[in-house]
Image (tube, rainbow, N blue to C red; front, side, top):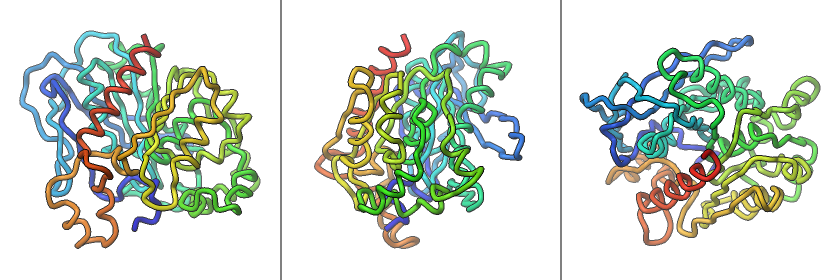
Length: 344
């Protein structure tokens, strides 16, 4: 079993295939290094009118890729902007299937690795600086808007953030929710959400002094107009009074099948209960497991992953009778409708 069931897979990830993929451009994005030396690897998907050759971006033996045109010219805008946040141990690829879906519908979509908590960068020092994750997204937004090619075609007044697992926590902090670490640690003694609490030290939730102050500070970005959480973890680090003060629309998805130690009712359900009723929508996908919100797996992927890392084949498993593609379709359609209503 993975160390944390609310992390994204600590494996190479890829994309599913959205509609109109031939009209999606993709390119790397330069994000200026932060004052403390935190560097970001970012990728942007966007609508294009180019008719060039596509490549299967992110293809690997376990996961499917999605065809997109590398360095295509962005089409005329302005387009709404969506930023994506991956889970613990994952990468920018984890929500690429959703990036393709949204880009095909007219959004500019940007994603970045979060240093210290990615597949290829598991730095303990950076992982403990959890407050940097929301700041990564703010820096990513600034980079897109400042880019000579993408900036003029992106509407800086229509911005949303979407995150999976620890990425869900990240976008809620970006939306204005504030951490109370002492309350979270006290809650952990009741073993309400074991998998989330197991990482409290590694993610710096038991820090003191300046680190505690930074984590409990205001990490919100006033430019965010809507947020989507996909089966988040660490929700209980946000006290209910902080959630009650969130003033932007939030769409919450929970996985109906608990793969172990991260029950939706204790995480996504807690988030839904704390947010203002008029500002949130809560959807439990009954046959989804935590990793159902990640990309599609190839046939035989479970056996291949298990042979390399026993227990990690769970990243390709879903519950019920529907396949992951059907779950993706439900989630993508609901998100598109939500963003269409909240970022008109």
